[in-house]
Picture 1 (cartoon, helix red, strand yellow):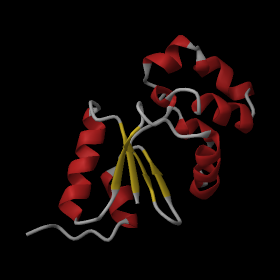
Picture 2 (cartoon, rainbow, N blue to C red; picture 1 turned 90 degrees about the vertical axis):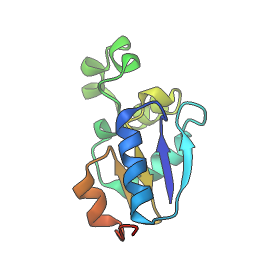
Picture 3 (cartoon, rainbow, N blue to C red; picture 1 turned 90 degrees about the horizontal axis):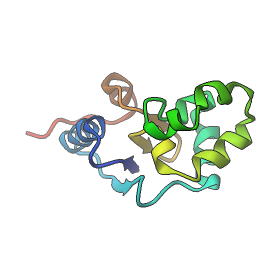
Picture 4 (spheres, one colour; picture 1 turned 180 degrees about the vertical axis):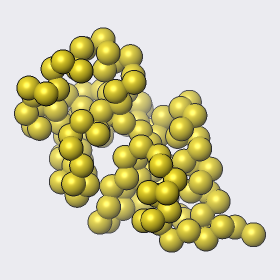
Amino acid sequence: MVFICYPKCTTCQKAKAYLNSSGVQYEQRDIKGNNPSYDELKAWFDISGLPIKKFFNTSGMAYKALNLKDKLPVMSVDDCLRLLSTDGMLVKRPMLIGEDFVLVGFKQDDWKAVLPFREKV
């Protein structure tokens, strides 16, 4: 699994702590230093079944600066994916990518439903 995060983000820190306590093995990737490519985002979007808006960091400064709240509803999925691939700070995080699932944002109950949770003793 790949854990995509922004290390300074408190939600990402909570998700990482959860992963560490679960005993799940993962590879960490800093979204700012290693932004997802168009092809990665397209594949993750297809696997996730989520609406494209869920992939945007709607509380971020970049989202607000680009006035995406008004632009997203008229943008195609392809245009959204291309935009997301230009700046990691536009992408919602954390993300956890497995072979057959994509979790976007951290909601512990959602993650627990997908992961084999084994609290470390």
